[in-house]
Amino acid sequence: FLIDGFPRSIDNAECFDRILGPLSEVQFMLFFDCPMEVMEKRLLKRGETSGRDDDNLAVIKKRFNTFIEQSMPVVEVYRSKGLVRSMSAVPPPDVVFESVASLFESGAALRTAKPDASMRVKSEVEYLRDNVDPVFAPLLEDLLKSRPSDVKGWCIQSLQSS
Image (cartoon, rainbow, N blue to C red; front, side, top):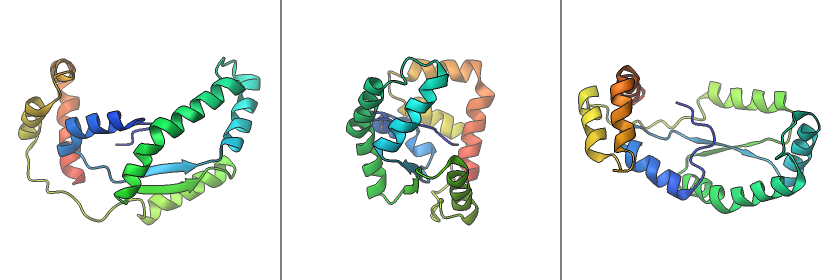
């Protein structure tokens, strides 16, 4: 799975690991490195035509500060585990895309070690039920009732990717 923009804080990461940690493995975090000045220029340019109220200098600076304070600590945790693949986002989008595509095609984004995949789907669902944070238990049960094939699919995919 690809999860865009999550976790955004250490609390998000801890919750994610508590709920899905035994069922998934973060293979890597793709980090787009871009200086504030470049992002600011791009967002202000986007604001000229986007109609978005939040593409203004004050909000952009606030979002950037929030990112530095809350999200960079998450990046550093994953970096300390050797899971961050950094990519400059300064070049034009087509150049960045080619760099990302090359990263995936070369396999450099993936770790070679894979976790043990001996659990069966049923035991993964049971494990989820037994270990889910009580705050998320109602959501899990709703998913198991309303989208059981999705939950089963997530468990199967987790097993196949390990």
